Image (cartoon, rainbow, N blue to C red; front, side, top):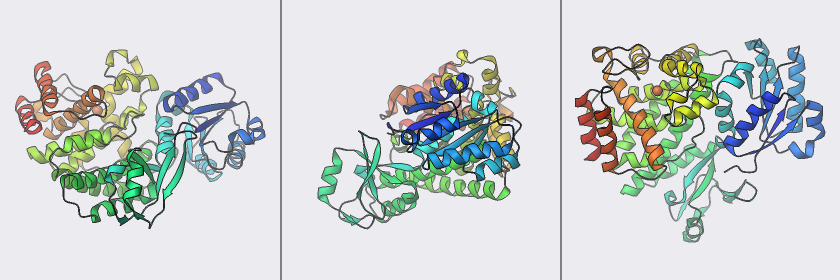
Length: 449
Ligand SMILES: [Fe+2]
C-alpha cells in the first residue's frame, strides 16, 4: 500500500542498520543509509520525501547534540516522522527536549533492539493516517462528507478523486467498482461513520457497513491506547489515560450494539482486514469476538471483557522481532529463553504497562487480564491457578485469542464457515484441559446456530 515509502537511517553502526533493514523488509518499503547527519542533509533530494527518519543518537554526549541532529533531520525531511534512538540513560526531561526539537518519538536503545515498539510506531505512521474503505460501502446519489482518495500503485501516492461535499453518482460507483478499496484520511473517519449511519440503510448490507465503520474507529482508538501504553519516554498523565479508557469503553459499547444486529458478526470482523504487522494488531478482532461471547453467553459485561481483551496482549510488544514471528505462527518452541519468559508473563506485563501509564482499569478487569492464559488443568500461566479462581471472562478472552489465531492462519481474509468454527471448538475439547467443557459446548452452539 505504501510501496514507494522511504525510511532513511542515520547511523554507521552495522547492528543498528540490520535492525532497520528488518523493519523495511517487514513493511516492504525502501531504505537508505547515511553515516552521519551531514551526509544525510547533503542528500536532500534523495530524502526530502522520506516518511520515516531513524536517527541513532546513542553516542551523543549531550542532549543538545541530539536535539541538533533532530533539527537538521526535520529540516531535511519535513514530512517525515523522526524517531530517535537514544542512550538508555536519557530521562523524561531530556526526551521532552528532543521531542520539542522535532522528534515524534524517542526510544531507548534497548527498546529499539529488544522489542517491537518501533514496528508499532512505523505501522502507525505508514497506515495510521489513512483508512481503507470498501467501495461497496459507498451509497449512490448522496453527497459525501469526506474526501475520497485512490492509491496509485505505481508511485504509492494518494490521489484525491472525489472531494468532500460532492455527490457520488452511478458513474463514480462504476469506475470505483474495479478498485474495490479506496481511502479516506483519518480525520474524516468520524464523518464517514456519520455518513454510513445517516444513510439509514437497515438492510443486511447496510448494517454490515455501519458495523465496519464502527469497527474502524474502534481499531483506531485502540492503536492510540497501544502507543500510550508503550511510550516509556514520556511522563504518564492521569488525564490522557482516563480519556482514552473512557473513549474505548464507549466504542466497545457501540461496537457490541452494532455487532448484535448482524446475522454473521464473525464474518464482518474476520473480513475487516486491518494491517497485521505487530504482535498486537489482531487485538481489536480478538476483543470483538470476546465481547460477542460475553453478550450471547451472558458472562460478565461485554464492554469489560472487550477492554480486557484489548489490553491482555500489550505485553507481547516486549518480545523480540523473532519472538513476535514465532508467536504469530504459534511456534512457541522457537522462542529463545528471554522471549519464552516474556510470553509466559505477558498478561502480567500488560497489566503493569497499563497501570504504569495510569490507565484506570477496574480491579475485576485487571483480574480478567491476569488470568487470560490460565487453564482448568492448572497448566496455564503465569500462576497455574485452577478453575475456581479463574474469572469466566478470562476463558472468553483466551478462547477468542485462539479462535483468531486459527482463523487468520487458516483462512486468511476469507470467511470461515460454521463448520470450520465447530472444528475449532472441537479441537479445543479434544486437546482439552484449557476450558470448562460446558463453556465450550455453549460456544459451539452459538457459533454454529
Ligand atoms: Fe495473550
